[in-house]
Amino acid sequence: MENIIELNKVTKRFGGITALNKASLKVTQGEVVGLIGDNGAGKSTLIKTLVGVYSPDEGEIFIRGDKITNWNALKARESGIETVFQDRALTPQQSIVKNIFMGKELRYPFGFIKEKEQIYEANRLIREIGFTSKLINAESPVGNLSGGERQGVAIARAIYNNAELIVLDEPTNNLSLNETQKVFDFVLNVKKSNRSVLFIGHNIYHVYDISDRFVILDRGEVVHQLNKNDISTPEELMKIMRETIKTH
Amino acid sequence: MSNKNSYLSNYFHRNGRALGSIGYFILLMVIFFIGAPEAWIRPNLHQSVFVMMPTLIFLTIPLVFLVASGEIDLSFASTYAVAAYVFALLVKNGVDPGICFVLGILTGAAIGALVGTLIVFFRLSSLVASLGMLFLLRGVILLLTNSRSITIMEVENHWIYPLLVGNFYGFPMQIFWAALFVIFCYYFFNKHVFGIHIQHVGDNTVSAEQMGINVNAVKIKAFMFVGVGAAIGGIFTTMITYTFFPTQGFGYLLLALAAVFVGGTPYWGGLGTIIGAVFGVGIIAYMEIGIIAIGWSGEWRQFFNGLIILLALLGHRLHGERVR
Image 1 (cartoon, rainbow over the protein chains, first blue to last red):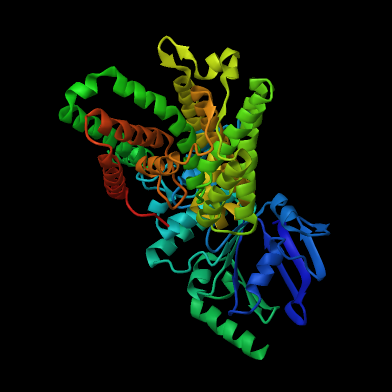
Image 2 (spheres, rainbow over the protein chains, first blue to last red):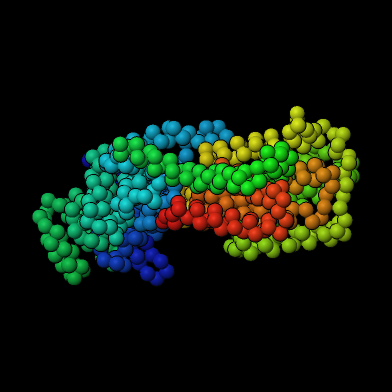
């Protein structure tokens, strides 16, 4: 499988603090990678480097095997990497379709909006990622949706923006069991469409359920990587995480 | 069935506020009709309303855009006079009134840009900053004119007069222009990138910014649009009366704001309704003129204006609180 992105021994420092220390991470097409680590382990620095908000001080970044220099947010988006922010960047009083096309509306000349095309496309997108309720369509206001469904709108928007890799930053935070399951269903549909997901979370059980591979981060270093096949229960993952962090 | 329900509920989400203000308007008409049928069937009551409505529409509709973007402007009532002053002064000095009209409107846009830039870049409260501008601009006008008015009979023989404010088979031309303005604004607000971005910005500034919308530019443009609307209103009124008054526009300040909110646009941003605002203007204009027409004394006017604002606000509460 082709690597969508590969970070090779990436280091990022802020003043005297080394937030990332020779961290390596790759995501291949169609896989869900779970990134775990305690608060302050460097998860957020790693993600922000991955999506181009930070440029690394040392190390290399490869996109589909090609080395990229002067990595930045624009290049990341052009490479098909989309982030779903923790607050999801939605406007709740507006409809789903307006949210999906926010800032990237389909336009006629003079800036008028191709409303019918947008609604058609938005309906297609939300069905594709797994909205099944007949009560929800592209014109429903986002404010009427549950937390998990709102996450789905943000994921649908990422797909519309031609995302090959969707970075989900703590997508199941503050969600009920039922809502978490909805988010998992969305993620599985993304995977089914041969796109990749980087799933960040500090709930080991959530990360375990959804990911194909795990990357454990501690104090700015990638201390362990393992496949789901290597273990059989989330408790095992928890144990490995504890041990690697302790010995590290 | 459930599918139908979702379309119905989406329809009410989109149009509920406009429908509410249409309902109020109809209710008010019925009350007037029952209360004073003789006054109501006299055409001159409606004529007076139709003369007043265009000016209020030019002031109110752009305010819907601004309020939906999460800001407010009070200075428009003075911008109204400044633009009219520029227009009248240039006409008086022999400049072609067509050119004066354009320059007057550009003045309005420039003042809007100034107010907007001040508020956006210095992160001032739009309520307080525009209140300051309201007094400041009015002060400038009073100082420049020495509180004297300017008469411009010159415009009467220019083609711009019959085109903009002339008589068309008994209808004042400004009604057509106001109607065109409403139709344009309806599409501008609901089907144009500008209106859509305004709604996103007013709804959640941070989200809009994250998705690449230039929040500051959107807000400044909304302030400019208010300035343009105020300028059109001011210049039209000046042409209709052939006179520029240094105090003109002040009376419209609270009426236009009332029309926005009675029309169903909530104060918190993200939502707005153009159709609702038109009926809001209708309600305010009929209140202003209707009370007198049915033979009550002018003292009642303010009382009923206040009452209707409060009732309308209570009614629009039925559409619920802000969703987050």
